[in-house]
Length: 83
Figure (cartoon, rainbow, N blue to C red):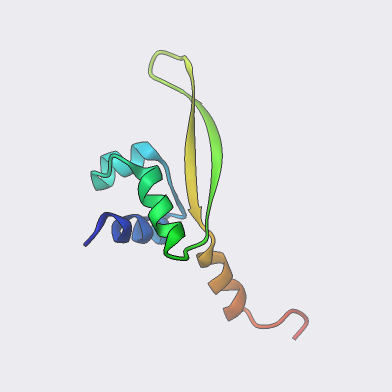
């Protein structure tokens, strides 16, 4: 399984992924590069900036990526609005 396939599956299972999860759970060191590859392949992935704190209490900012296709599939299966 490629890194892109692992990332795609992770987002489908858990809804989103951030660099720490990618490194710890998948062994992927360059998440942003793999997300760029997935976007180039046609997957709709959104990015949001998350603020947290590190183990010393200092503020940190990191990206979190979400696969939007999952929501689109759920909307299609629900049927047309008002139907």
